[in-house]
Length: 294
Figure 1 (cartoon, rainbow, N blue to C red):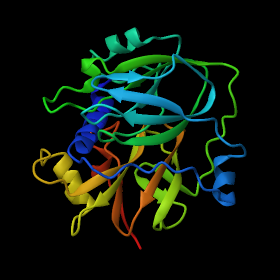
Figure 2: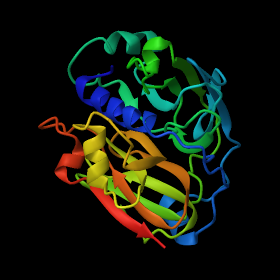
Figure 3: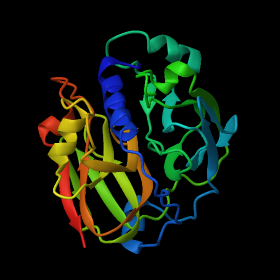
């Protein structure tokens, strides 16, 4: 893995998603306009057409070169296992080969590795979309979700290099209906979420990397129940919640957008990223949130 800390983050999230398959297709709805959220996001232009990423067992297929700007990845899972598409920018001219070498060592992530979110894990037959602003350079798209044998898909070859070329379109993200700001250690929503489709701008305003996992809680269950099940509980038994997407690991200052369809019920937000100081997941520092949708 890239490092002990970020590797633990990704594996915790991937394992949690892997234990929570759903037969319901992921929401795939165009962003709804909201002038206030659009101003906050700086969104003034329609985003470019989505780029399809096809995931199989164990390969990610996408164009070798993408234009710079706001890039929406439409992840289609054509495999038999869960898959995701985590975006990693390789700075300073580094390549996927350099990344594979760095993943074999312990310690902090190299300064040339930048995590920019990307579509979260989805079940076979599903698809989902997520948008990130990409500047020119070298990138890798990877899947960290493990197979039932415990081996992460990246170790089975599920890593794909791609280039982002200069001369792309606008860097404005899609118009958002809602904003969730991540900090050390909290989630702050611009408003209460209601039933229906939401296009959510996620901002990492904290000094550390963070992620956002949205959970649909099972009746009578809490975010703490899910946290225990996904960590010390060893993911045994029925999961207390169903992950509904969100954004993958993002470095400080990064933004991402995802869409989610919410029905009435209890929901939660959680961050599994290990803390830079003590190595404990941010959820242990209180980075969880529970809310009800009417």
